[in-house]
Image (cartoon, rainbow, N blue to C red):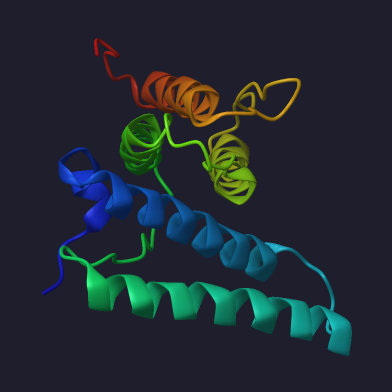
Length: 162
């Protein structure tokens, strides 16, 4: 059974971490498009298919090149699961924060807040606070993900000593 690469983000070399950071953002882009109610026009379907094809091609290339392989996160439907995933992503983006060609994972952050909004609705609580502007760096992204993990911890009643 393949291991989950993002669970071991701290042990990845810089090149692998950079590749994984791009992969998880492509994965989030596709998942976000799947979850949006875009309609069923040919243009909408092509956009979803294009996002999936980009993600799948990157996933296959990544898994052929690196060990451990990346396994997609299927369920982020509890505060604990979302908190753990946010912290794994935080650790990954902290690892790549000094790469000059790094990018801001807009889609990954959108996925994180979409999952948090779903939890807030389901648990009848206030949604997580979103930053006024998207983070511009991997370091800022890590801070946003940590704040969201702490919000999840509060929902779950978990101590956030880290």
